[in-house]
Length: 364
Image 1 (cartoon, rainbow, N blue to C red):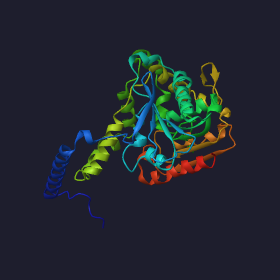
Image 2 (tube, rainbow, N blue to C red; image 1 turned 30 degrees about the vertical axis):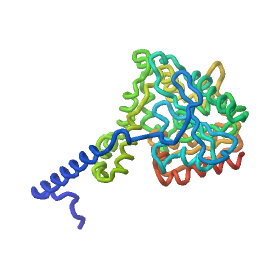
Image 3 (tube, helix red, strand yellow; image 1 turned 30 degrees about the horizontal axis):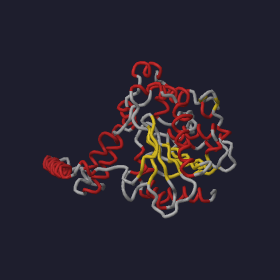
Image 4 (cartoon, rainbow, N blue to C red; image 1 turned 60 degrees about the vertical axis):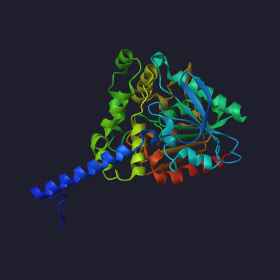
């Protein structure tokens, strides 16, 4: 007979409440000992090499004597801060890539101001991203660089690579949405985010709010897993309150989750309308700067990396990329983890950076 999970007798319930109180007090005591200044993120040394309109291009300090000649530029999503790729010592994708000899740059999109409400996807792709690529090419002396796009930054990188294939030597996409109307085996839309986006009146929101508040975006993400993200994880925190290292790691994640920049209103309008609602990326109907984005023009080698348990970018949305790009050199790699697990899972981080470097080395 399976014993009950909780002793439901009055004495048993009293004991359970007493133990919960003790754990809570221990948690409060541990939290009081944690120095807020010690909860650091983005710890790997880097230097700002270019800035414009609130956007900063960083170069990470190389960790080998002679880095590989073709640098890697990381383009993250707009909705969260890019330090997720460099969250903590010993579990940092950036640190691992540097240790394996890459020369790594990263775009920090910053926090859009009120004046940026009219900034468009064209401004990001043909303007800011293009300028960052040019800066890296100039600094490295290379005519083309390796580009790693993550999540929404991957969609922007696909657009850039299609419009400027001569500037991208190799393209890596990670947890990147491609087919925004992907369905499961039963024909239902994949992903709650995709379903919600179909019914938003984006024009009313963008016209009324200007920039879309980061708190609004965050609230939506939390509602996708309300129990897990509002109750379960904080209850589970009681199990680690006496371990200051694990508690600090938990707080790093919390800091990242709630550090959500506002979204430039026009970019948000275009991304929701053209990509989520009308699925123009795979249809070849996205227009930027008066030019059509044709994924068949993505002719450089492509490495598509996705998470099998991703609830934000379902694997069904990422997997079709190979059907739409024009390259004959297409590779893919999946991991049995979720969207965030791609960066914080110790198992993934042991495999992912070496896989990226091995793939790039084979095409150097």
